[in-house]
Length: 414
Image 1 (tube, rainbow, N blue to C red):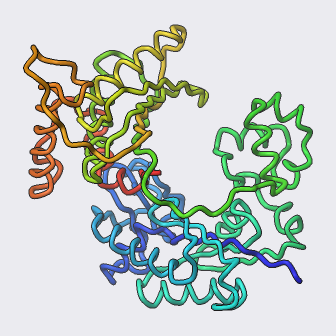
Image 2 (image 1 turned 90 degrees about the horizontal axis):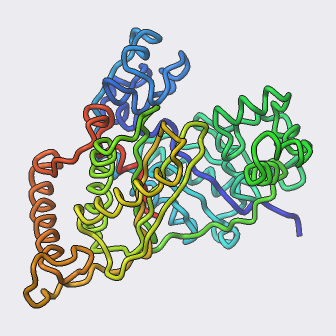
């Protein structure tokens, strides 16, 4: 039997900006940026003249004087994403949503019902355009990595199918930046050594790559360049972890900074846990230094955590420990929190009276009081918006930069 691609990667084109153009027909065909002081997302009309995500608003306007800024309609992003994912689910139950605007599909069992891979992809694209009003690009291939590359090549609003017998022909001339995990810094290192295409990366000696990138990264990237990707499309059930992160530029990690940033991240993570009726026993903090070097510290506590203040205290202790273990590192660029070992949020049974009590014990007076305060704040925020109430430890560096609603759309629980 002739081999056929069995994996699709579906990626909505310039999703946030496309939604804004859908909602306001006057914006169609015009350069659009979601944001204000910082560009959160840009339409293809804006991207063509150099506007990109995370760019300062003044710089974007300088590059594109006709650029139109919009604030963003976060509830519409969520609604349309769910509608598109529902359409994908009509063609296979094996849908792995990896972000608000992209997903992998395993269509191995869908051929008898819906036809060949190109027919399935075409039908999906027509339905997404017709029912949701959004452009979507799809790549079809034998592996997840290759399907993702194919969807990038198909953009904007296109379809690329890579037959199994033409994979090397397709991959070899493509720029190395399309390999999953090759960011700007890695791309610059590779190109400085004369590795500019995926084909050249695939043929590069493992020893030379390891000396350039480190052993782990070299093995991973060279494997992907050779299309060695055994990952299956995995439909997600309940979240196994909930996390959030904050990029800080180049910053000195003072105690005040840790309290502000980790307090803000803990609030975001704990709020999402409680909204799902969940709590977690393992807390992990990641600290990234310059040069993309990261360290993590984690702890597993006896009782599941979902209280904001408790998560903040644990995270601060872990981050302080991580920094103490690396005293020569004086600059950090990112902080992240994740909670795993997730379970149902248990009902708290108050312990017998004792002074204060350990907040890490679910039934202590402190722990019960904290959770009740959090639930009261959750109710207020649900009615009046997130900004209506909160803790004092909010990351000052994030105020006015990227709205929490936008961050939470990107921070899909895994």
